[in-house]
Image (cartoon, rainbow, N blue to C red; front, side, top):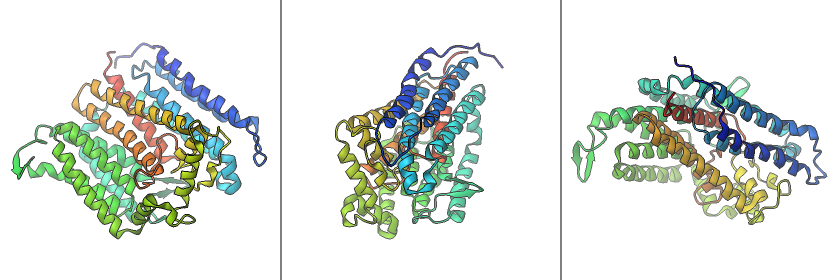
Length: 437
């Protein structure tokens, strides 16, 4: 193994100033807002200081170990995660007054961030010498793992609000669909790269040019898995995400728009059938069209979210001056509404710009990748982050029905946060591989 000489990551170190100031100054701004029902303590600032120390420590560790990966992706991730930590700190006193379960919301979010940064650093450091080519050899294993996780979730997970999403492992809860996102991308990247020449025209079916039927089977399993998530687990968000990533990667590998068109048509029919036969999907569509039909029950969250976004205006009401805690699931599904109320339109546009930069940076890493497999993995992982953002933001602002997935790095939660940090770690590994030793 060639040992790389340490190198100070100067650009990354400078770019980390912005998320550091956000975490510290943002919390101080919240402290300055007089709140008679909330007892702030200056000891609460330790959460922000610990977060700043962690991200800078990770950057210094990368430099000491000779990591040559992208120096922009970590600051972008730290900025988004810092916004999530700031919102958790801002929300936890109000949410704790309503439900003692949220008394340690900010501290628990910091724990998830510590674990997530550990996953990011461990992935980058442990895999950078091996690259990620070894994942390609086990592509069918990743497919079987994906299908097995989905099957176990359907068979074992309890039904909560009409959906089966969570598995309980002792004191923790795990959402297997978060893990499946990465295993399916890995399978698709390996399969499509190996069969790239065959995922074109081989025989005709009307106007379509299709590959031999045996090579369509694994891709058919991918489509069937997405539909199974929709039909069996009643999870519209994960189904849209899986199928969207599948279509993007298929288009990148084949360059054939007809696959995307046919896939969208088939999935639209499946969604229409789910709307007709599944009450949970029907409720979400009706709330999308008119949440005021039941504003005190099924439409309550959406109505409160609309109020929050409307009251934010252009510049927002200011950190700590809004009332986003009236939204029942503001820390998860509707954290974007809290950002919109307190930071306004400019704040939400800035947040979306961060996601755009992160996704485009991931695509740029894919373009510079040394081989087709790494290129497809980078595209697939970046698409996960971008599409997940579009789905949840589109649901909150009522462009599409609410899907119930999380806003990457900003929403409170464990499984999603750890998975997203793993995605960033894999992108760092790929970017490290396109630089000479």
